[in-house]
Amino acid sequence: MTTNPSAELLDNLLTVAGQATAVREEVRVWSMSGVMSGVERVTFPDGTTAIFKYAKKPFDSEDRALRLAHTLGVPVPQVHASAVLDGWLGMLMEDLGPSVREADDLDGVAAAVILHGTRTAPPLPVLDQDRLRALPPRALAHLERLRKADRWQDADDVEDALGRLAQAAEARSAGATLAPFGWVHSEFHPTSLHIGERGWRLLDFARAFTGPGLLDLASWHGTIEPPHPVRLRVFLEQYVTAGGTPDTLAPRGGLTAENWALGWHRMWAVEWFMDQSIRWINDPATDPAYIKAVRRHLTDVLHLLET
Image 1: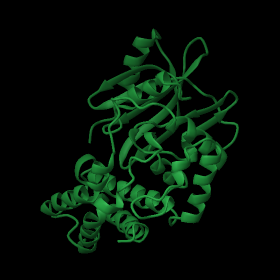
Image 2 (image 1 turned 60 degrees about the vertical axis):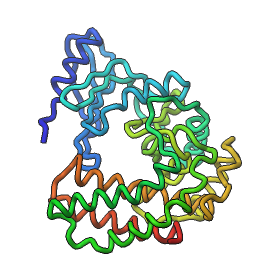
Image 3 (image 1 turned 90 degrees about the vertical axis):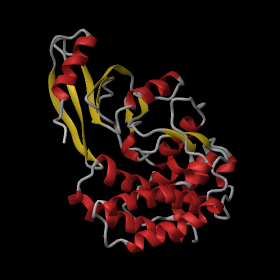
Image 4 (image 1 turned 120 degrees about the vertical axis):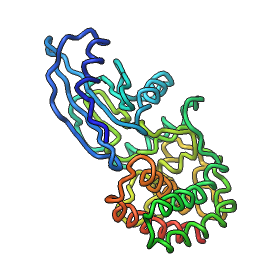
């Protein structure tokens, strides 16, 4: 595993920002799907502060997404400087200060309406119907690679579930480009919405893409607890009331909007977990945890997508 080059990254950023030195204070260091990342507050000699965030591939293009969002009028923290070193991204960003309260559902729908109403731009990857229905076959390809590496040997149930989903994917992915289709934050949770003295800002754009906005709305309540279609339906209705497109509530793929959203969001997560397992993490020691998460999500996906 690559040594964490945060000190060297920060030195590069300080040079770009015209600062000689800064005092570092850890705000949060975490392992995103096993990839180390961190957020620090840095204080300059004149007493001003900035946020220093660093992350490794595949989270190394967040600076571009944030700058794009800022240009298009989405409330996000401003990026003062960014640099890439050996596959690691470092950013110096605006310090938003302490949050005044946690984001609630009404804050979430207000932020989602603004984000989803923003015109999309070419640099973002696209998840349309073709790419959505390719998720189960892609996950099967990841499984094949894992098994060739003598891993995930007792996962016939995973293979069976993915095979069933691959067969149903064309019909169930219909409606993927129904509105809202555009910016998808993809890490859209209450913790990604900072509410401060000067209003709100959306954080954590490392995996933003162009796709079905329903995936953001499905992710808001998280994936730790079992999916709750009734609660999501209420959230979708709040979103429409707040100015989101009425098409949000339209059935798609032969399913209710809420079941479609929850099912495909979890399928998207499954493919991501399996891609992580073979490509970015590639550590057999993490297999039991990943297999457990994939099994849990696939059980939900089969039920939600009625396959």
